[in-house]
Length: 427
Image (cartoon, rainbow, N blue to C red; front, side, top):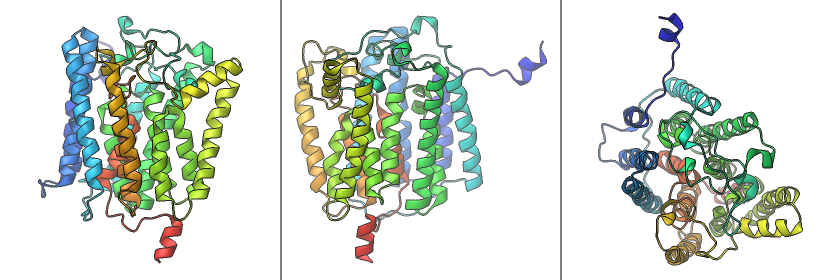
């Protein structure tokens, strides 16, 4: 027997096994055993309970059990609804006792490095998924909302979970070849690692700067890296990039122009467009002009990129329409995936969209006095609500709101965290 096979052999972790291992670690680190009936404990348990939905989808699609697939989507819808209500309820919470992780800062830092190293291995060991699960490649669907330069980053196969799910069947049907975008696999890998690193750094920064508790930031980053969804979809730029940009919008909230620029870049997945009323109401008294300038600058970067990557003016106008979501839902030529691709009548998306619009406008008016805490929770609630009428994700895109959900779980009382101008006025 080869000595290296004993010491250095690395076997992949089966998805269910990793779910239990990561969940036990998360519970041990973040459950406050001296205060079992606390909102923090409930949040951690609910976050753990999201993963079974992805397990059902993963194994259902891999093994051809449609009832598991349907149950997985329903599970994710249900958990998404619970978290949306939790984010809305957070706006009413005033008292937030300090509940730090059950591990020292040094231990959390070590765990972050270890888990991120596992994530690096997951992304860099590409191309080892089962041969029968190779993604299909077809043209981008022109009758649906989307940003083509982002869509051209096709899903990168990862080796962490033994049974990939929808990403390797229907979800990638609208993705184009790497050759069309001139994107090499190595370049794609570095982009993915950079996005994940930016999320980890953003969580630590919010904890250290805005929460004024470095240990809470380390705890937030640790919890992010422990969630199986992060590793399973480590190769999906469209799942993690919007969440990273929204997180850094929060990081820069005291600099309206920079925050606006990050939010403008987040428009690459269309749905953050609906965050504008909320964020404009936050900067309404002071800083709205600078914020709008930043938003326009970020939006202009996306439009410029779209212009230089289009085949001509007609193609550019089509892609510009898709970027802004100017597509009537339920058209005959629109192809649906996720839960809406399982026979559900797409016309039912219209009342869900209407309720979503009402919610986005309502949160711009309530609560009347917004602080950083309400801003984070309302932003997360809006992004969670978008999952219900997303015709191409079916509730799968947890990454758009996941960093914000984790911040809400760890946040202290933030009533005094206003814009820089607002803080100066209250002082």
